[in-house]
Image (tube, rainbow, N blue to C red; front, top):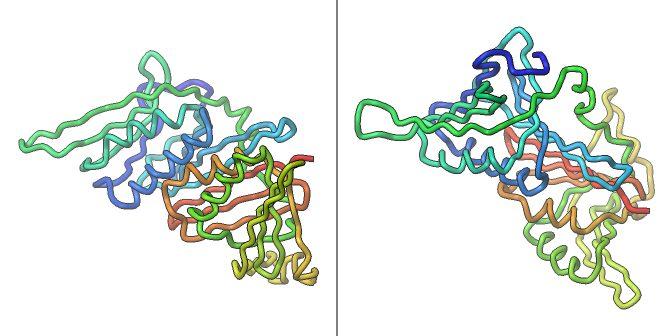
Length: 286
């Protein structure tokens, strides 16, 4: 796809015959993304939708990689495209589709490139009622696509399952009133601590028996985390507002929530729920 929208319709995505439970969860994920980023990149392929936030880590920015499976796609000569848009606008459009018979998203060119969300609403008559929301987007030139690849994760020191997110959110919100930074530390015995330390106060919340994911390398051998001291803590100090933003924005309760810590470098969160995968990276503060 070229840097400009080609013709009236460039890409069409049908979300399904009805705004089902899965699609409501997708709406919840988009609402989460809207709380994490004012603008982000949407990558459309035949198989999946990707929402990408790529702030400059050197400046302390967080990054995000979110995958959603598509229900039905229409392939073109080049079957993917990258768009920059305001996620809150898409969330507002999908919010009106809670009782829709069908929702269809397509890329159009109406004075400017737009993501058109066509919502088919129930009607007492034989004719359908269709409401269309046009969301302005910027089309990313193909030469810049490499800037939005899935981020690579350095070999982590510890990977651990997160506690119940509502509990973690409550703890972090209270700590946010005491400090701008939070230390996350964990070990291979399923223990994780959230700590803040200032000149006036030191607070630590302990979580135990969380469990550690059985990660393995491609050749079937155990990950490099194996063989390390199980009690040794790996820690990273991060911006507490970025963590609170992630936890406060959760609209879909994930079936699995993981945290990978690269000591003093980065904290990598993975939230999984059936057809949805969201990765969030928060760089450590020196």
